[in-house]
Amino acid sequence: MEKDPAQVEHYAGALLELARATGSVDRIAEEARAALDFIAESREVRRFLGDAAVTDAGKGDALRRLLGAHVHPALLHFLLILTHEDRLALFPSIVEAFLRQESGSDETVWGELCAARPPRDEQLRAIETELSRRLGRPVRLRVRTDAGVIGGARVRVGDVVVDGTIDGQLDAIRARLLA
Image (cartoon, rainbow, N blue to C red):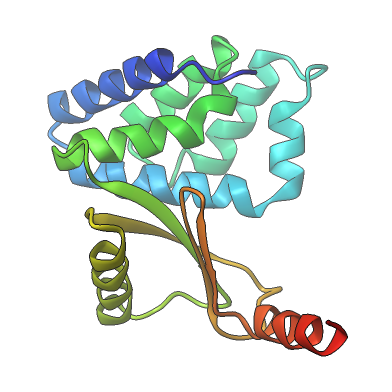
């Protein structure tokens, strides 16, 4: 499905209104990030949710079983609506737009930090501060863990990628030696 920015903003605004109406903006923001991480980290879940042969009801049942006990009921209901409207593929973009709208700044840029284990809060804030300084805009990072990362971290903010992983450093050395 092609991303329609207006549609993404519309859904993000609806999620923000829902979160405000339930008095759960912070909780829904955190749980939306966690749900996004869960889906992103599980190839089987992504494949199942993206399978056109699986009915909306089947996808909805799976979401209820997988996330129902872990997310706010309003967020689960929102995910079920996205599933029913065949818009679940937009969820990553919707979450990014929701977080931007929630922060009240259209200038905030969202990115992703991928590491073998989550950084400490002060490490994450230091990375966000340095990226904000370099990019000239506020940067917020969503953390994703990847067991395939041996050490270090990879940060992606839009088209900018900073690869500080051991694999990335070894690839750079290999490229220099072969050049």
